[in-house]
Amino acid sequence: MESELVLHNGGCHCKNVRWKVQAPTSFIAWKCNCSNCSMRGNVHFVVPRQRFELLGDSDQFITTYTFGTHTAKHTFCKVCGIASFYTPRSNPDGIAVTLACLDPGTLSHVEIRHADGKNWEDFVHRSGIALQSKIHSTQ
Image (cartoon, rainbow, N blue to C red):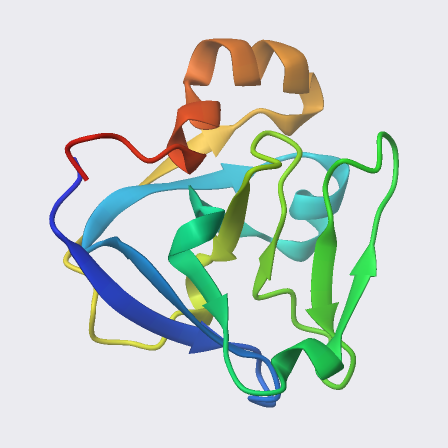
């Protein structure tokens, strides 16, 4: 499903947190039913950490929430509360970008798949999501 990498921009509602991410124009996004994502209605896609960059003074406006294993780092804007990206437990070497926080105009297709966060270990094992934060030689 992957296409050529392009630069996508995005951020939070108040625009204090802004970032850019290199990702295909066509990709898989995950609608997760874990306790946190289901409450937020989160749909996200995963990229290697090296392909994500915070812009300007965005880091001054970010705070982080953790729970459970504390592997996931749920970052959100201190001003508007929007979680435009975070470090997912499934991909601690990557970034999960909230699909709705992308600026419009750079996507050609998104396939939304169900992420069974309520049965996290089984889902991660069978889904291949952990590979999405790896840089492959064809990318």
